[in-house]
Length: 106
Image (cartoon, rainbow, N blue to C red; front, side):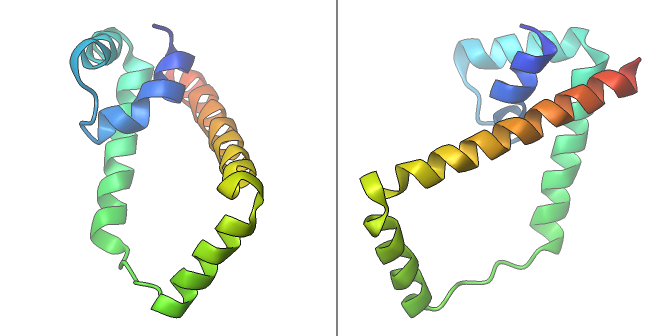
């Protein structure tokens, strides 16, 4: 596994302890030998902890939730296009984070 693959496919789930079996072993092996990704994992865990402790979760009123659901259902294929765009945005952010981690470790 290389750094880009780790960050793009495993970092977030690893930080949340969601990996199992072979994926968990591969991620642990990579982080065990890669200081840059180990630092990224530590940063990701710190960020998630800050979010959990500092950000209040506000529940949207039911009418707002219903309007959002209706809008998603009106989107072609139930919002697939929007989800694809969000995934592409997330991929770009992860690549930028991987580059930053790699540069920081140099």
